[in-house]
Amino acid sequence: MFRTKRSGLVRRLWRSRAPAEGDGDADTGGAAGCCLGKPGASKPNPGTEAELKALTYSILKKIKEKQLEVLLQAVESRGGARSPCLLLPGKADARLGQQSFPLPLLLYKVFRWPDLRHSSELKRLSCCESYGKINPDLVCCNPHHMSRLCELESPPPPYSRYPTDFLKPPDSPGSVPASTETGGTAYSAPMGFSDSLALQERGEQPHWCVVAYWEEKTRVGRLYSVQEPSLDIFYDLPQGTGFCLGQLASDNKSQLVQMVRAKIGYGIQLSREPDGVWVYNRSCYPIFIKSATLDNPDSRTLLVHKVFPGFSIKAFDFEKAGSLQRPNDHEFSQQPRTGFTVQISFVKGWGQCYTRQFISSCPCWLEVIFNNR
Image (cartoon, rainbow, N blue to C red; front, side):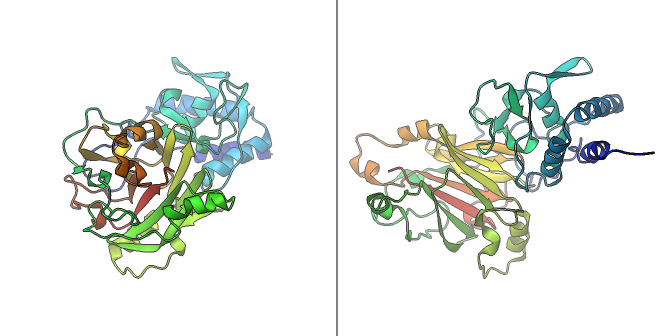
């Protein structure tokens, strides 16, 4: 029987749909500050699965062939390959059982998050053409131009909290504050914050943050200065541009470090947006984040938050950051980086619910230091 290219693409897409069960999360011990709504938590019954397949086939067969190729590229690469927007009518609805879903939401359910219930659970990535647009006639339905919003626990549990020591002004105005829980390890910032004014005088665009990569207590490579609105930080990413951790020369022979380094995969996307700095977990394993603006500004302790694959979290809130600066403390306000630090660990968490008490015991982690001048 003659089979068209279109039907072949549709079959490949259905085979590449998101699994209904099993999330493959790593290091799941402890639930401190984790995103609520773990993906892949429920398995649909066979009747729903058959109905979903019939509905998906009928929708995909109405999509243009080139658009099917775009969707297939995004789905099969799991967002690793750069794929253009898939613009489809955003107001079209599809009925599944007793429920009616907008077309974009249905595609997101099929190809990324089977447990997705409402569009309010989603955040569009800044790389998407539909980013920032309100109710356009055509909406991007590329599942990998979207992320799930990370919901924070409120009130947070009392464990996995640490004193906010890094909110205190450093002893030396020319040095970066010691990393929290790194045993006093500190470093000076080559091409760091002190030269941002010099860059402006030369007409160059100043960086808005620098990124340091650590393996346990050792920093690997130089500080990475970020000027573009978004940055990919990865170990192995097809067509990837940005901060490639796989290219850094590391002398660490620890088997755990090497294993975690290989699991970083597509890594994270760091993006500066109007309301703050967002972190999108592109990898297949959880990441763990600690930031002053993820907690109550008056709190003297910080919570470590777990972010599952495919989720985004506002790691640094510009509005909340203003409350970290004490207006009457001139010395504090003159420090360009005091309190404006985010720590991110790949795969392995730290805190009282884990074997690692401090982030310096984590195999692979990042420190993002913001320039607030």
